[in-house]
Image 1: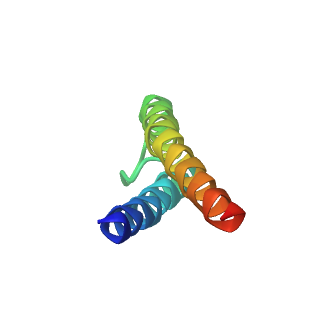
Image 2: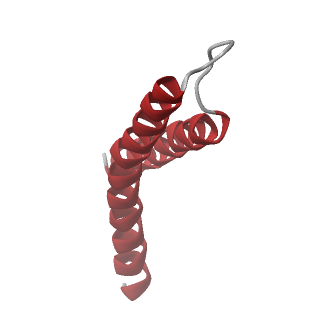
Length: 76
């Protein structure tokens, strides 16, 4: 059972990091329209930052859980 939880946390880390990378890419590229206006670019910026926050925080929590488990395992 412990192995299943560890694998689940590892998969969550990977998925969240990929989603974070896509948000970062969207932040760099901006709006995907042919001729974006300043309003479209602003909306893209807000969406990218929101996506980075939504994926970054849970990823940091999962990484913290994983680090705690590794530290406890080394102490044994």
